Image 1 (spheres, rainbow, N blue to C red):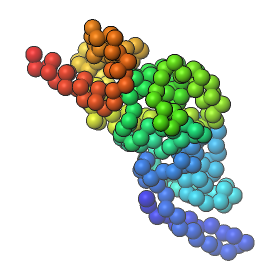
Image 2 (cartoon, one colour):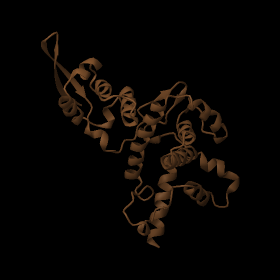
Image 3 (spheres, rainbow, N blue to C red):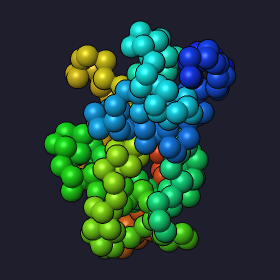
Image 4 (tube, rainbow, N blue to C red):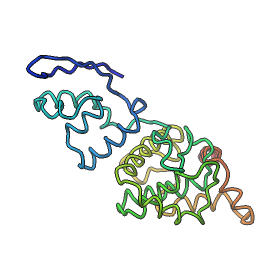
Length: 247
């Protein structure tokens, strides 16, 4: 957090307010994450967005000179840089709960579906994919992911406010950055030359091909493989890539 001082006038009297504003993603609240999503979507005015981020009155920000609002917005430049972060800021909505920090307790099957729908939504922008993506992530407490119930959950998710779903997608982008840092052989960032890539493709039906290669001929137990913790499977894939690179 960083402390800022806001100077304003009330009844012609000069006043000052000191506030702590976030300067990294790990410091923002649920309300601030949603405000950021509304700002990105263009459904919140600048003074409304800044009021939430700085915890001050909207009317005070609206009366502030444009230049001062601009200087205030400069203190929030962290929003333009997606730094690795491994925790969901919105812990739950209604009876549905997010995965734990570092995706602990999340199954590989749940991750495959969530990441696939996220990639599809990033590509085509369809509301159906966004609803399914959020429905994959947020599950009832102590519930184990089952793709057979996905569409029913997605219908409930469709009623969730768009800015909340977009806020969740922003959060997931940060988690993808964390995954890239933790498992660079799998989530390697594009280097401008597709021919040099040696990681398995996770776009389209890439996760399905990876899952099938893990299961192999043990089709009877494929559900058991899908229930394995995602971090266990990603470490396994990373080790396999290292082994193959030595051959």
